[in-house]
Length: 606
Image 1: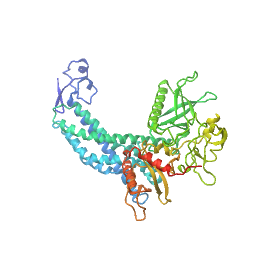
Image 2: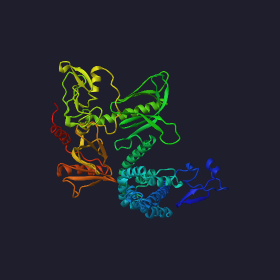
Image 3: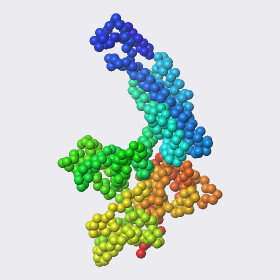
Image 4: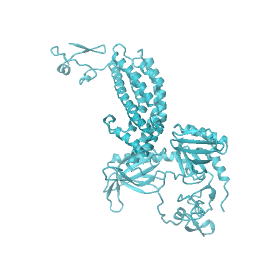
């Protein structure tokens, strides 16, 4: 029986017939070398072979990774920088998008990859990886910087693709080339985020096969400890970036019309579904997008290009219920009911139905767990229960606690939309929303003006469906009672006039600053996703005392606090939020105290 050598190991030589029969054939020797053979299953791989395969896999993936880094650094970044130097768009935009990708590329291209190639060339005499990977650990700080910048880079990439035709054309031209492999720039930019967890996985596998007394074990274990720590941050960024990437895809599928790309939105599930019509019981093709806070019920568009779906209804998770239904003509049906609409749906199979119901139920449960502290409009407002409505006088919301109608969300003004109070629930509403009259028991059954919701409850008459709830239509009072920080600030955006706003950073959306006109408003004026913003604390000559600024690209927000102490409290929270980390809450009663103080300074309505 002949022999061959692989990495200083002797292996038996068999013909195909002898391998299958179990007996050696001395006449026709054929070298059968694990691992890259069709008959490798005939042999029991040794640990040495397994370690060699892991090392080979590391080298193979490192070569592919360096190719991807070159694409990002030498093609995308270089081409965009070349165009930016012509004045088409700011050079800083390109720098902020690609962060320190050039440094990462240099390290892998000139150091790590050559070291791995050299080691694999001398594997027979030096079969080890731990020492090489230990050389990687000091450079993991570069990945921390890249991961930290990733969300901002994705946002900038989206902004300038929409804003600059030249910027968009360069990216599309490169993406159409074969070197891109039909993948977008966003997909390629995710590679450095994913690379550190890849090292962790290969190193764990390597240590499993490495004998306890192997000289390389100590270096390999040290490397794993540091790489695993770095991988934790990368994995978190991967989850965020993958969610963002999915939101961008959905945004494009919906024709860039729906407000999908938002820090508070989390994609859960999507898929084709059939909708049962109530009148003729026919089934119509529909498509669902389920998020942590809403369901988008969509109609497919039959077009060659452009948007794939049109949103028919947006149903909030708040108040949603899902249940199985039995339909003799249509199997696998279930019902989704929300405040906006009720849908009877048919899944493609029983398994598909179960998956949808499970996804809805888990989403609803998580939503209620996160929002159980926001059930009342305000901790300080004792609401009248439905059973007592009209039988007990309500506590009126003060006029100055709101700047818009608490039902239709339209802003008040002195002429066409003045403030009125619903005599049943005490909400401040406009004349259109209070144009309903009903007898109230607590007022000796006299006819009183009430809002449309109370009218519906007290009379049993169905109210007309209101407008769809937008992303800003979350009551300030819901957030104030459970916030990381809240209070009044003076606010100015770019060259607009200064105005007093009620600012909230809620616990459940700790990376978003909500701006309201007043503490009881039911709709925010605007939101600022804090992630990636720069914080400027140094007052300029024309700035008032206790001022600070938030800036990102061309977006600049200036704020003034009531005191230097309050300013520092806001900055302590915001400086953490802009890095993507969740800030620590202030003292438990601070948020409530701020809201209460603001309400007590307002005068009672008469």
